[in-house]
Image 1 (cartoon, rainbow, N blue to C red):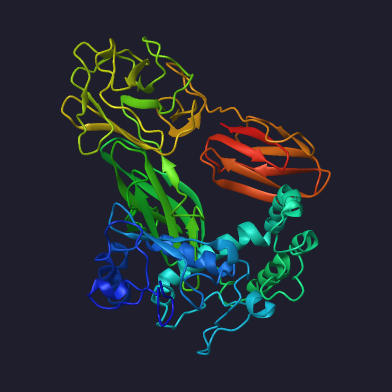
Image 2: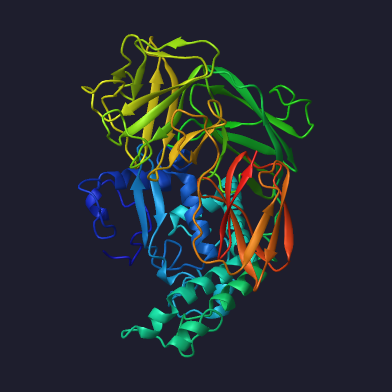
Length: 564
């Protein structure tokens, strides 16, 4: 595969797919015919790019490459080392790959001046332009994104998020120190090591003498932070998004989502009902005609349909200078609204090794239903399925009733000859959807889940009505928002949390031997808070956080925080 003379630049090379053979490597049995189509869209029909590209993922990749000075990538001189993955919606998703030469490690650099690549110097890397390749038609992906006014603001919003969460805080150095200590003994004993143990240790902060590109990581990135914080593009100020609210939720109706957005001229709401869906984007208005209050009051609103599935959404807003997302990591993080009816899918076990055996003594997958009403509901001729194209896959037998405010278990084990409720399908621990339909075959609940952990379940909290979270199993019992967390190391630096549970704020008191980072993760593993700790204690406001379980982690300890 050649990367010379344009190479894997994503330039349009004509309708003959063989023109692309020398520049790309196919990892599947077919797909070459896609290359002319989607490169033509990228180069010649960019106004419709979202039909063929996951543009948000492309923006994230380009921002990541630039922040981390990763030049053995698409933005580098050879426009290489990325994957293109075609999803179920026929969109191409660019994915970062081969990060071993990020943080200034690539030994050649082309700053876009037209000359051949040459060896880098540390200043050129520290001051790498955030808008590198804008105006360069030989880089159509980054050039077209940065030449689009709105996409450019989104790019810089993601750029700021990456820098602020990882480098402005200095957290990257703390993490690197931890990783360095984990492998230092192995480096010392490696008979094929390229560098000495002293060089390995010092290179975190200092360039290895005589080695082109082997700059110290903090030498590079601390100065890069300083440069960017005075960069004219980086310091542009976007809107502030707060106080996100929604009107009442009722199945098969509508709900209005509003937000206070200051310093804004435009906003849109992206929403979907499943992680398998593409976000639908609709404009939000501050005109007094979209259930948004008075015209010009800074409250923006948009109305969206409510089906039977939970709603995932985010907000983007911009002004003439810059853009902002809420949550900041959208589209890959999002806010959620739980939708529930009379009978709901309440808890799912897709990897059951010891939770509960069925009446035949087998530890099979199971699906728990819950009746939210005060009356029994007959489920004769209702349906369960794990296949969207076949929602009536399994029929509840005649005589099935779920009592008032009670639970019902269906074993998803494909053992239909066993007595009791045994569906004709199994669940996948790698993730899928479960659908519940009524006697008219109308969908009344749908849950989509990802990779499951053995003997943890995925259930609603609050029981019967809330959003889905990972939890300790509550087989035929009220769901709780607890999950056991093992200590990952012996306690050296300790901390205490109070009050816990909490609904307003929490104080974390530390016994800190040395400065270190604190991370707070939500139940699906996303970081919602991080800070370098030097003080005895800190107080964190949590009034705007979603109810549920959070994990507080330092280098030496993990604890559970419950917000109710």
